[in-house]
Image (cartoon, rainbow, N blue to C red; front, side, top):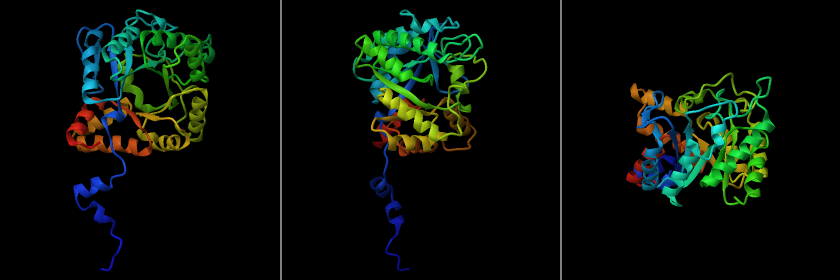
Length: 328
């Protein structure tokens, strides 16, 4: 056959496929979540997330060292406190578990890996919501912003490089940026969860942080039917001073990641969430998918959509895989 154009020529060997590949994953694209638990003495595997653990504070240095050794760009710290109340008071306790974790991680890492602290109240409230409730049981946006400002200053003083504003309150980036700048923390960055959807894929995470949610988060997290709304949220966060914008979850929102990457001139991050992780792990455990190929395909799809930073529970493992394969 006289076919002058044969796209298969570029796919005929692994070397040719590598030559023509449009997107590459690197350890520097990956960020690892770390759960630090106040009440445990040894690591505890999270049942719904096989291979993921809660760690005592005493194990944190080892986790930070591992992230540095495999070449990750960042770690994100989440806390599991021993005390919870309506206001999430432990979130602003200078001797609280998250504050201690940030101090320890920053002291260990210095500037070798970026320390991101989750800035939200859901891990610290007894009702499991991301903010302060009013008398009717609804999340009070502006009262919550005041708590976020207090939390931001506590975490900045502890040494956080970035704060992950994940509560989806209106004006949260502006409020946090204002608080930080007013106290001289102009170099502390904001990784804004700009489009965080009210997803069904978060349940294993709630086990990871021992959170019991009363009700739902439909009034502040985004409706998963909406795409234009995400564009609005992203543009607002950029205008309010975000340094990085995050889309969460990742797999069901590749279109939103792509939109954001085209629309903004700052880095776009995506969070491959606990339910997405669990789906692959459980499917692989039943022999339904090839685990290695499924993870690589999944992470590459997020990168291809436009995310330059991927927060994933596979971060450490996959940084090693990428290092061994030379796929950078």
